[in-house]
Every structure is written in structure tokens, then in C-alpha cells.
Image (cartoon, rainbow, N blue to C red; front, top):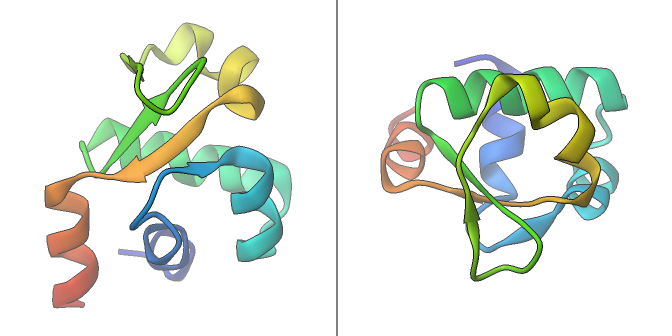
Length: 85
């Protein structure tokens, strides 16, 4: 797990909007988007849109267009990985 992935998971114990995640991690937007992609590819992060109760299935083709409007939450597997580092 990279430092960026660890930092992102550290902020996702609760549902967090993209803009807040961007601010709290201090990562440049492109790096945050790519980090979220990697974490979602392995099932460590879940996304929600248009509200925090509606999970959005990850689709690489539409992720870039929606990422700024989504909210994110670490999955159980993601939390386990975060806590075992």
C-alpha cells in the first residue's frame, strides 16, 4: 500500500465527499483520482452518488466524470488493510 493510499483510507472511516477528501489529504486532484481508482479496483473503497445512501457501482469509463460529485467510504477489506499496515 502506498502512502497516498494509506492517507486516503485514513480519511474514509465515514462517508466523505470528494471535495473534503481532496482538502484533507492535500493530494493533487489527478493523484487523488488515480489513488481512488486503484483502491476501488481492489475493493478497498466504495463510492456513493447522488447521496450517501446510494452506492454507485464502480465503472472505469464513467468514474472520471462523476468522481467530483461522489462520496467515498472504505470497505471492510480496506479498513483491515489500513489497520494492518
